[in-house]
Image (cartoon, rainbow, N blue to C red; front, side, top):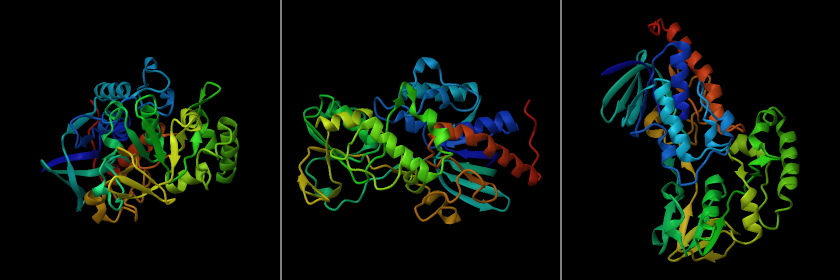
Length: 384
């Protein structure tokens, strides 16, 4: 059994950020393991044209800024280059192609069962992220659908759908990006099936990225922020009630309670108003070549792209430890630890955006891990 002081499960941006702070601030050389053969695999697998929805200037990981030449909202390939360079320059220690199947507590250590043997550590940080396992609803009759049904995780670009009738299920940022790509003179017809009405925000206001205001907004009382956002949405987009369903709850209340992330709405509202994208009711079931909607109508698309989100996929790994809630999410994210020597990180949906959140929580978690090891009388060697 290979023994480590600290193991981080997940080589995405959150895991990399914590590994860096453990190394540079606490002189702890953590091992980062990941099932993929590259770091930041979820970024590599995103569709063409995917980019940050928060400004790159403050979306960097600790100790290394995103190059300005990548622009204000860096795209997928630029971010992949940044993460690869981050691993090299920060001298992080990765074990790739290692799939963790289960984590168990044994006396004062944690044992990780992997496809390639067992690992043990005094401290474990699970940072596999919110985009681990594609979530496809169990729609009745989906197996009878005569057209093509795919999850957004399997969508790469719009080219295969030229001239087709496409139904995009969802109204989040991925659904919006995909619908915009398809409606840009590619697909013959594009519809969006909306179950949960989106909270729309612009990418920038008067040239200033909208997330520049997020830190201030997040300190406001929830009712005040929700009311302010409602007024600003009307100012930014006008009255879209005739074109798009209106959320019943405020933007911040939805984010806090339901992890309902706002949708960048600049181009979406224009495409909807000009009918290049049609909004229809949520999907209820499939019936051969028809998709039945919750308002009693039906559509007959050639293709259905389900931008229906992801699951954390943590049940098999840690579900037996009593550290998950009823939805399968970590009961404790960040601080405090979920159990002595076990932390979860990166499973929230903050108003400031995930990248900035990863940077801000990395140092506190690294400090807490070092404190735990010190209290357990586990001295670690000084960094050479």
